[in-house]
Length: 264
Image 1 (cartoon, rainbow, N blue to C red):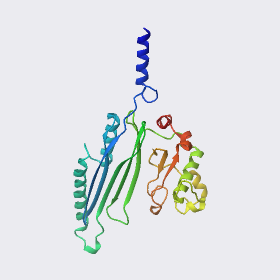
Image 2 (tube, helix red, strand yellow):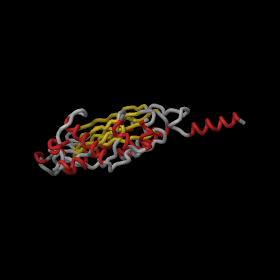
Image 3 (cartoon, rainbow, N blue to C red):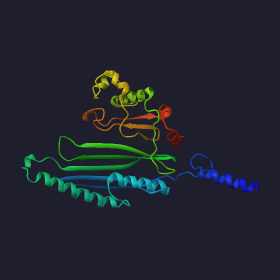
Image 4 (tube, rainbow, N blue to C red):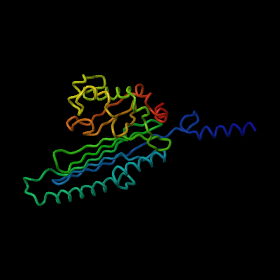
């Protein structure tokens, strides 16, 4: 009877998943890099994808699904990137011709461009983070770049909410310090409130204490939580894509329980 009891107890511990000594550790995600590039006077296309090829099925399937969502297509293996790039190039070239064929040569602008980079950013035995960058130009003064990070829990392949106390003045102060360090050029450097205001839409120093969190959710690196503001979100185009990392030791009080479990 005692032997049966121990067997049942061991089974429960194994089913509990990520947090007991008996739990099976997730495999390391292995990727294969697939790249496509093509350009002429009408279109420029570059697609780079780090496709998951090995690891626990549940997280590999989740990552592949998300990559397809980002690209708006159905890729099944790394070789599909070439066909995707070719199709995108043809589409952009046709768009360019439809806009400029009737114009005089001196009135035509540059080639329409589309760049995609989807790369493995970080991973531990509990989570994996992918980074997505898209740049496009289809006429106008300049192109537009989108950067986003996505963190997935390895045990079930889900994206987990990271921040809890988002209205905290202490968190707002960490955001303010992070923005200052971005414009100062290094995490260990800073600048005055008046200096950083020159780079932002904010006009008064008091506004720096209440800068809203980025519209896109933060993501996990190997060492902290990364915040990333899209172009024009809190600053003009010339300020670039404002990005900074808050180390785990500082951000811990503001994380959800699920996030804390992933970074233990």
